[in-house]
Figure 1 (tube, each protein chain N blue to C red):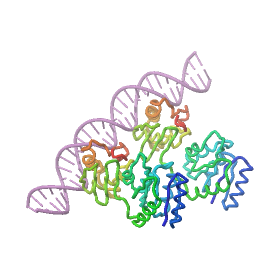
Figure 2: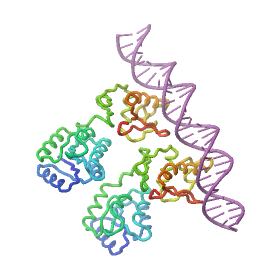
Figure 3: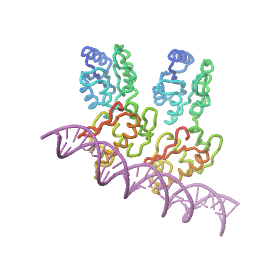
Figure 4: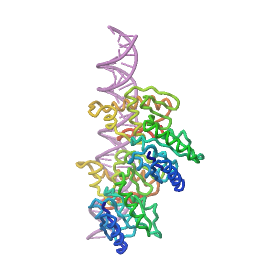
Length: 225
Length: 225
DNA sequence: CCCCTACCTGAGAACCCGCTGAACCGGACG
DNA sequence: CGTCCGGTTCAGCGGGTTCTCAGGTAGGGG
């Protein structure tokens, strides 16, 4: 049972490492965000234990990037009880469970075993940007508490934009991924569908999640507009 | 495992070389900046160990130029503990790790193995010069905390200047790279666009990132002005 | 000190890109 | 067979972007 522990407080990290090793886990420790991200990407762990506050890159960012890289190792987040962030955030951002510091060692072990048993299928299914979320498995789109009905083409486009939220995606890239590599129709089709989406997810809410970057393409705001 | 060691103190360099060779590394040694830059550019090393204080060209400059030349070999910097520069600077300037002199040989070996295992760092997505930064993927330009909106052409020009920051680039080179190889229009276009950029990234901040080098071209200051 | 060249600058014209409403098409379903 | 719905195409419009041009300014050599 392989565990990756990403925790910058060296003393705490060492304590946990020794404890887990004693319980029969194989434990690797990283002390900052980037190294943690790298390790979790490169090696197959059963669970990743992620502190929120990390040098270089927050635990949130690490989890976000892991999921973006299609790494679905279960993540257990360690949140400080007085932190700015709360547990809901952690779950939103791709964590599968969380533990508030300070935590009991026994509870940690129990949660780890539970997560590992559950295995990678704990793969989170929803993509979210601010209050906008997309659930590919259920094919559902919600803005806040409202459920929004979209056609399959609209859904495919939105999902693609969500998977690249924050980045500019070109019309060509969109066509190749949402339509077909050898789609030979009019590029205008993308503009039309962007318009359909904006009508459903932006206009009614006075938001602007989908920005157009003239000459380059479109970008879905990471915060949902 | 190939290591390039750039260190001007001959005695120290020799000691390290012997030690690393004993550990099974293949070590090349250079004693000044320019030679180090050349060697690192011409040969594929797994890690480059760079002293900060070097004759001819500082370690910072070497690392900067390596990255500018799209050489992404991991760099471990050796910083003097009483130096003018601190470790943060080293990491800022493209180094992947650093070690403060005097250092333990065992630690050096450990760090080298770690760096080599990690491999070439993912080519960074953001280009930065001082507080000015350009993110090609997100197509974003920021000066300090301000986001600056630029047109495609302006962005292309700025990106090109950033990729050669610190170097003088000729108008011809600019036209060939930002416009088109067989662009036959007025070369005044470059002057016009340089002006557009200065209006957005320099004038409002009282800075002068883009210098004109009369008779030669333009240079984007490595420190952002 | 003058002149020539390189560069700067403001304004305007041409163009292209994206937006939009509407029409067309084909399949599903009653 | 008619209707509805999703997908796609089309053409006009509006405005930002790109580029040209002409005149002004500053630096450097003779």
